[in-house]
Amino acid sequence: MADRKTKIIYIVGCSRSGSTILDSILGSHDDVIGLGELEKVHEAGWCGEDYCGCGERVRDCEFWTAVHDRWTGETSADSQRYMELQGRYTRVRQLPRVVAVSRRAAGPFGTYSRLTVALYEAVLREAGTRTLVDSSKNPVRALALSRMPGVDLRLIHLVRDPRGVAASLMKAWKRDPRAGIQHDIAALGVNQVAKGWSLVTRLSDWILRRSPPENVVRLRYEDFLADPGASLSAIGRAADLDMSSVADQVISGDPIHIGHTVAGNRLRMQQAVALRKKDDWERSIDPEVRSVIERRCRRGMSRYGYAPGEGGD
Ligand SMILES: [Zn+2]
View 1: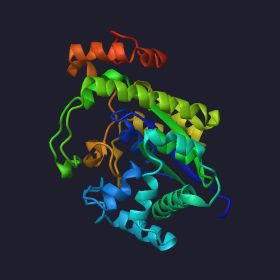
View 2: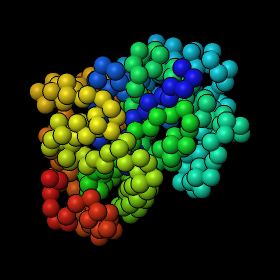
View 3: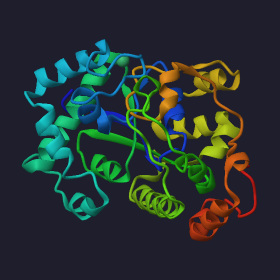
View 4: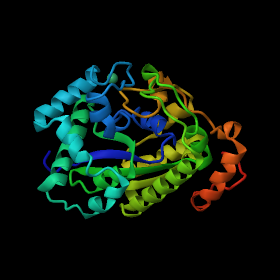
């Protein structure tokens, strides 16, 4: 137990890039549990009002209550303390601090690292699996995890065409907690989307370059939809898992079960979903938005093979 590291498949990337469905698909492997954005469990789940994918509030959900009791029992920590620590290593402006952390067990990062691994372990024990998917997406958290001696990190950088991301993020949503929308979501402006997409994509890329190449996957959401079998096999190689039965299930069109998923998008409240075949942003995007995105994200789009004027292939 002492030298066994906790295996985490971490999905890094922009919001609305398909991480919730990928998380649930990976979680359908017998030895993997996928539960959404673990970064938000304390604040939005245990201390907040968020609903779990099972339909209960996270703090009333049997699974998350068992995880909470196990984690507090084993660490004697509380969520307040954890959130303070997490808040030091979460934001882009804190990146230099995360780069500089020492791997020593002493100090605040050592405590943060120990409590994070204990949380992952509590989830794994309750779920009875050996691998956990964390789809928090935040690249700063990815870097922090890569600095934790107890974590065996496998990274998936999930990228979606920024025009698809814009079409999704530029819609406003009314609060509907039972449908997975915890608060009113304002539509983002096109410049905000372009800037966010470029920043997150560059940062995620940078973190992947710093990681062992055999443990990382760069995955375009569109390629995943077009050929889930090939994408899952690439993920399987990076995560040392045989994903063939998961791929068979997805390809056969069987619904994907959504478990005790926290945060993530509203999809997670549907309990079972099927993977669509193709992204459909082209039908809903405003032509002016499309041309701003194509101009402002030109470099990143070309790096990921998204051609201006072309559809969501
Ligand atoms: Zn639940």
